[in-house]
Amino acid sequence: MRCGVLLLSFTPRPDVVVAAAARLCYSDVSAAELLAGESPEKMRGLLRHIRESGHFSPFEHASFTFAVDGLSRVASHQLVRHRIASFSQQSQRYVTMGEPDVVIPPSITKDSELQQRYLEMVRTAHAVYMQLVESGVPKEDARYILPHGWSTRLVMTMNARELHHFFTLRLCRRAQWEIRNLAREMLVKVREEAPLLFETAGPSCVLRGRCEEKNPCGRRYSSLEELLNEKIV
Ligand SMILES: Cc1cc2nc3c(=O)[nH]c(=O)nc-3n(C[C@H](O)[C@H](O)[C@H](O)COP(=O)(O)OP(=O)(O)OC[C@H]3O[C@@H](n4cnc5c(N)ncnc54)[C@H](O)[C@@H]3O)c2cc1C
Image 1 (cartoon, rainbow, N blue to C red):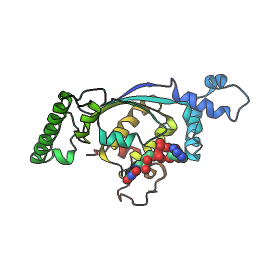
Image 2 (image 1 turned 90 degrees about the vertical axis):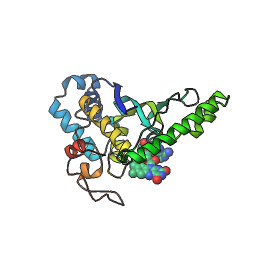
Image 3 (image 1 turned 60 degrees about the vertical axis):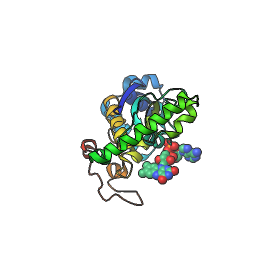
Image 4 (image 1 turned 60 degrees about the horizontal axis):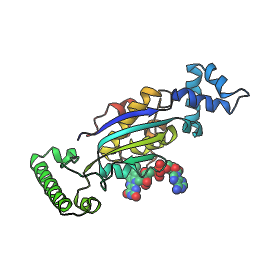
């Protein structure tokens, strides 16, 4: 299964809602009035100010829900470390893994012999899995034989503050290619719906023009456009 990301749902008018929440803090009128009165340029300036000053709490009022299919369990394990997000993941306790279905890293697909060997092992592991299931071993135990690369599906919700944090960590070149690809797809999708909230996002080289990693990759991005257009693997 190829990895696919769908933006299932999101807070309506996310830019406006966050801008109104932020403006409310400094205003003597209601958020409803503010929602009507804010010009796009004023919103842009306000949201930029909040991002740059790090006063991110108004960003928590906009949430985004994604459906992700075809991610490896390696990457999903990295993803679920983000504790402020909400997750529902396909269960290998209840769903039978009826066909071999793995993500193959590009470092392996580029060598047909290695890819062949990789797939042979996957098919062997899957055949043993099916034998265990058919012999009455519970799926929750039989799955122990399946490889890390097995593909999974999940639904995930993050608010815009957590998304910014996630993009800072997972769009950095030091993150692994699969979760970087996922993070970039997610950023592209949320920028379509909330261009002001995500006018900029990503690692510190993009946000602040300098690397804040202890072990820099040595190839910092010069702009968000470079990050969005880069072929990751
Ligand atoms: C390049 C890279 C390499 C990594 N390598 C490893 C590794 O080798 N081993 C490993 O175990 N992990 C590794 N990680 C995972 C990493 O340690 C974090 O678990 C993961 O990135 C989630 O980050 P987070 O905790 O900041 O995010 P979230 O869980 O989304 O939390 C967001 C923020 O909320 C706050 N917060 C959340 N929960 C708490 C809490 N309980 N108490 C206080 N504040 C909280 C923190 O400010 C946190 O930054 C790696 C991550 C990256 C990006």
